[in-house]
Length: 193
Image (tube, rainbow, N blue to C red; front, side, top):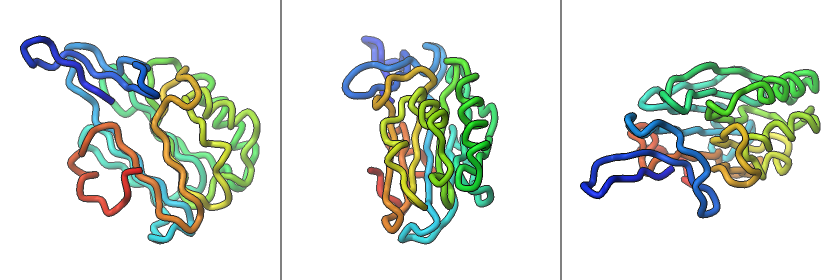
């Protein structure tokens, strides 16, 4: 994410960039920037956390229960949290398809934070992969058993243009954020890659 300023140094607008190009203005010119972050811990991450955390404008949401894909939908115009949903994509291809249906029916007004807790790859379907790719993911098909993976996606984003991080099962959990150092994330012991 990058803020733009007018000639006097006043904040003007905030955009998400990917691969060197402007992807989307995430909030109107008269609103301050949105701080977003997401952690993902697979079951066997080396730091043995088995949890996930979403961060939106100073609000930290910890998801310690619910295996699979967690989605946090944020209004890109206001920064308001709209909804948190959980899909057990380890145990149910029906839930993977429900996740696909949910994502497919979102409008372009939303930013979607996605993180896996415990395990989320076992019952993924082609529809689920395509839905995550419609948020800009290029790594969702690389996720293996008990891997950590997270993404800050935007509905309609070109594949590979949004921020996402994937770590194998016995590596550390994943962390990413759209701001240089949101308050709650700056003290994390997680890597920022």
